[in-house]
Length: 204
Image 1 (cartoon, rainbow, N blue to C red):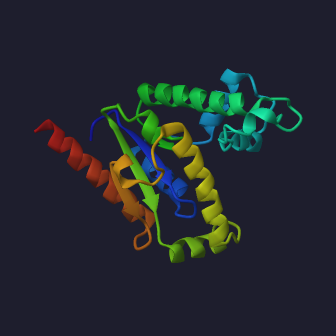
Image 2 (cartoon, rainbow, N blue to C red):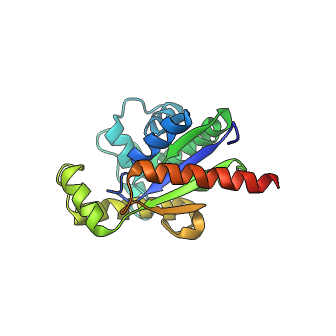
């Protein structure tokens, strides 16, 4: 496998995408970036006084018709400007991290931001409803499938708004994996073999 490789992971809620990203990073001995990117973006916007949940709420604010008219809680931040600023700052942070060395990047529209990077592989993780229902109950604090789907709608709105593409559309990614029938470790191994095969074919 090439020394410098960047993997972006997008996922439906309740599929274990975060765990899969961790497993991949460990197997490849590379860095994993997730919510840390939010804090990098926040530092650029000088909004370090907001906590992580506040920043994630800003990320999910994507309705341009309403968000500009309401202050963000008691901070007096224009929602429209803050949300756009968060996205742009995250995009710059993602590019910088990807160019600094091999890594796995979880979410944050990284597949779109890094689309032109030759050493980038984008993965979308999905699972059937039965699998997600079981994990929602046992892994995600008793969340129902309905609650998981509500979170997915937020992710979809955010992605669609800022990328102009459809979240979860297979054509947006190098590989779409359904983790319902295999362990996350097996899925990680399959992803690594896929990347290795692609890299071999590129050298032919």
